Length: 495
Image 1: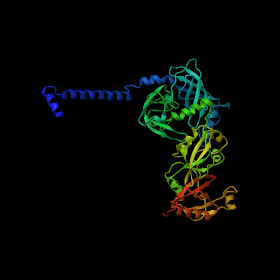
Image 2 (image 1 turned 120 degrees about the vertical axis):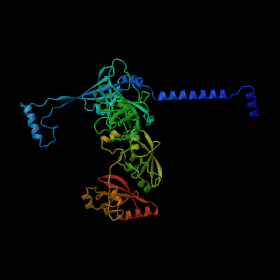
Image 3 (image 1 turned 90 degrees about the vertical axis):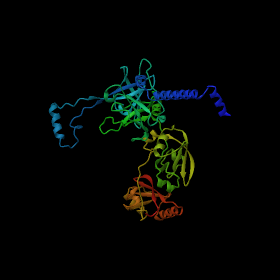
Image 4 (image 1 turned 135 degrees about the vertical axis):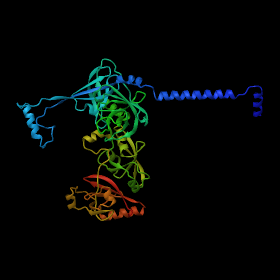
């Protein structure tokens, strides 16, 4: 029926094809316009409107420090240098009366940004550390003295306060977790003391770690130089998603590898500094190490993930019943990928909060409830922090590439071990063995095998037999060196 109807229509001179073509062309034109509008929005012709919007909230920071005068050539040449006498004579000739050098003032420059109309300013701790005087200069040219509210060396963040007669322009923190690799970003600050400057780039990478336990850096190719420290990294909505902190450079200048501390880290630190004048991070009270593939196999874990507890001294974890050898697989409802992730998550959790922690113990999971302490208090009392512990190896008898010996009173005295120390002493290590590759050395003390205590060589033989019978390919050893524990998994298969 349809072909016939079309034929009749055409016979009357009403062919629909031209109308359909016009509709199709109109649809294509609308699509093209929408695409062009989207591209125009994603890539604006100019970033000037954004720069004008946020620049009033960005500040230059100048610090002044009183440096005591020094006598002698210290600081000019190393002590004991053959040039030491030469410089001392030179100084004496220029100071014939022997007067003590006068103190002098040293200045430094940095950047920052205002986060509230009542004058709270964020910058890097290294910008203002040790400063006697701090001055904040706005884009308008106005200058105000600033005082330090609080600092955090772990994230290199400082919070300052200025007093002004009128409300100050400010910017807000954005969600750094939503920033994607490839997103446009704008850096603003005071590079090399040249005054307010803007640079643009993209997010080059996420979740970079440099050296700190709480590092979560955004890497960017936006130009960052000395003097940009403490300045903001903006997204295209004018929100701060990072604080420019460091660069990677062979010559001290920007080569397109800059690092900004993620705003989701900074905002938590700033909130605590603003409320308490210091940070208050959660503390679990364990020493931990990453779970490697061979450790996971030795413990019967399906995958190499979580944080393996090497030691549980007095603290919240011990009170909750955590044990050395437990693997923390979940903390406060979040899966634990590795030690770094756990450290950051614990630190970001409120002090005093009762947290559910899932551990892997003896082939099955167990849930414990831990009431977190405060890390800063623990550090002041030299208690262990929730960080990977560097702890090496120990034992005696020719097995697994190790020569092990029973721990005697003489060996305890020789190795400065406690009178109640137990385990097997490593008296030699085959340098071609896996044990040597994994860091075991003469003098290490092996206190556990297969997560059971060792007091005699027969205990180790029994643990090896049990692991072999259970079909395990490796045996987990707890090794102590200088009192510091760590787990090492050694293969039971002959190679």
